[in-house]
Image 1: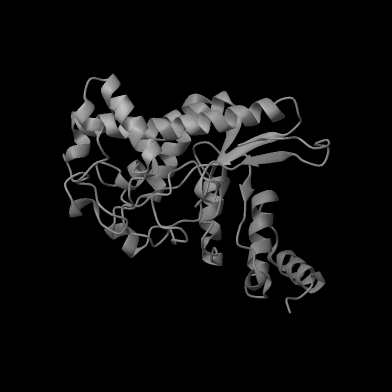
Image 2: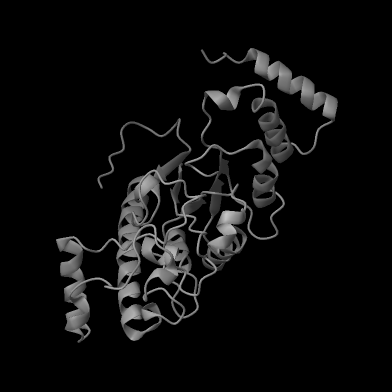
Length: 301
């Protein structure tokens, strides 16, 4: 990736660095366009092109285990399969073996090196400018309750030696003065997600702990692939305002299409913004201000 600064940054305060699919630091382990609030498969390792296989083979030979570098795991699940569908991610499966540790450490290390290189380049280009750098990480909350954390592992986040996979990433972000943006702060666990061992609350706590441990700033977004329903506003507020751990430095609200500006959605959003920025308003003031603001907006055709 090549960065070239054109002109001044007088009008820019933040620069977001894209690191992978949907801008996130991860492998494309689940199908593009998947609704990650509903996706229930583990995903699939992305290490089968000739370049990755050559690097895997070289790494295995350097460690004295050339047979481990012939290919990726042969017994890992596919995109839409559960951890129990094959041997690799089952409890005490291949992931929890010397070979599993070898492969997952290498796989996560390649992703971390990529993020380190790109953020290092960005910090060198923008380091002397009055802007804040930020980049996104994935919010891989499904199958989080499994011992192997399979969805995180195939995306490149490996929980090794009982350390969560976001810890080394937070360290790299802190080293380059980059804010870690976490999408999905509106995600609530539903019945389907409960069946997949989803645990958005626990994962968010782990991410915040990793950032606090390494001194990395954290920011948030709502889920990027689905429009956030107004019922999710209290959930977002609890994560960015009343959070007991680290509070995000900023929050970006996404998916603001034509439907969002309808009378059904716009007033609750205005109320949500005021409650976050200004605290609670009197009910009459909130209603009057919301209606007034809506009337001033251009209406979708």
